[in-house]
Image (cartoon, rainbow, N blue to C red; front, side, top):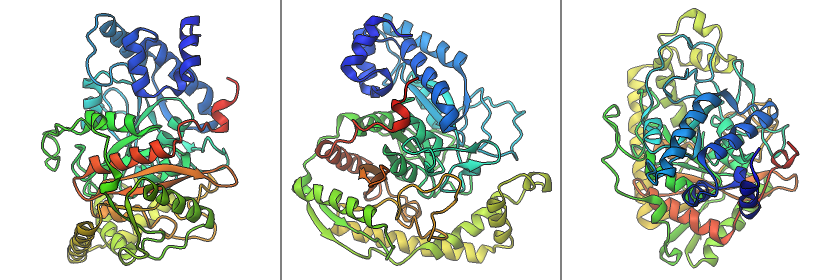
Length: 479
């Protein structure tokens, strides 16, 4: 239990659980709170809430508290290690984390391996003193936009435990929304950061291609991005300042980035030309989602930006993604043994079997179509600085389902994966609630290499329409 000094600080700042990373750092600096106390509270909430959420596949209190004690010593000496010293952060179970197995949500991965290496983003977090306390659940191999696996079971949304948190970074989103930690590291190869952020009412940012180094290489690397999932834009920008650095293991990572994203969020919306697309490519959108996101787009008009409605930005790109993914999937699983294939998700196995026999010609044809698609978006951004759209066509649906009723395939999330194809930075910002109390997000997309612009737009919206005071029912129950 925290002492009276911590309770007093907590009353002022709504408690350690709901403190932002920036607030925690200020509290460490003033010695109002220590990294050990913050980590203890993080672990306490994780242990209390996870039986309902199922957001974690691994918690390591002993390792976390040892990191926190080391951080506490540095703060006592007035010598913090870096920008996130002592701040608890979780890692999605797709990303290598030294000392812990990375099972990728699958029974097909052998846990009996050395696990002696951090992925680049985890290494950068560790170098800056972050307290890495656990790994969050994911769909198997991050292949589905929901989070339920034979290995870990069903992960649930803290706003309504009967609903999905989305996927594949569903555990990360659920844990941040429930006030377990302020920071989570997720991955996004088709919307896997933005969709869970949208369903769980938090901020999620997919950096542009190459901004955050990735290792080990995967066939999906040119689609994927690793990025922050937080309750505030400032926290996400702070986290990006740490992880947006090159790594020699990733030949595609961008050069060293001197940008201090968290310190450069101020901008003048009056300078922005914005396209608002309610359907993007003819999507059928739930009326409540449509109304909430349209109202959010109007906030930018109120801030002085030039906002123009663009119904169709590009043709439906699902066929292109299917063709591209067929070749990538065939390659990704071609070395799997029959024993491994026997234990993977039946839906994923069906995709693997459908991908068999993909040809190099078909795959290269898809890559050429992708290049034309990306060129189209480059030309689009000659006219518009930013693009706004819904994140998904529907609010969160039943946790056990892989898709909402009345929708099939990717027609309920046509808004996210196009920007994995083009490798553009994109974010989900909370913009309201349905009548059933489910969060809805607005997507903000920027041109390639303009990550800061997307964060600046998200910050401007956050200041105009604050969302951080909202608390899901699960998070406020007595513990």
